[in-house]
Image (cartoon, rainbow, N blue to C red; front, side):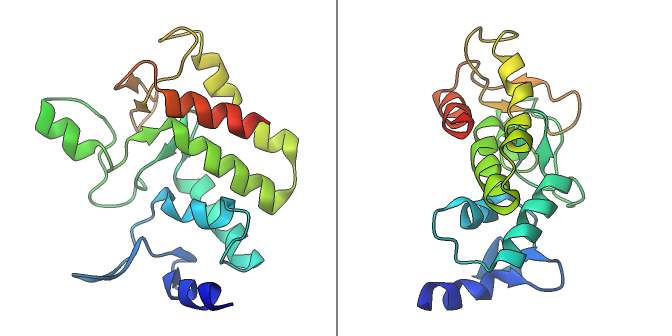
Length: 170
């Protein structure tokens, strides 16, 4: 329908995934970010099946870590792989490579939709289940460094991280 036709403007044919922003102040933004996973994970995706699979695959290759998804692909010039330093440095890194645990939920939903393989989809959650016993006992951290070893950062007990793992597990 009309939504799918309008949404098709987001597709970046050259890169094989969605633009993060279209019609922005500097034009279309080809930065690889996890936002496009929502277009796949929703019950009614505006993307055709081939593009859904491409989004899941590129996010798995460049954004997926053992503890969630990076906010920006490591190959981007603005990528920051470690969340640390003073407030300004931390604020700068927040959406430029930091791993967000809660984003594993939409990724698992999107992967399940595309591949219809519950065992593989659940396997992405296991490292976070182990994290339950290592930092904020019985909870999950808000964020992690974008570079290995994915050190936990931010809040040690983040409700949205826990909620998305629980939702995706079902």
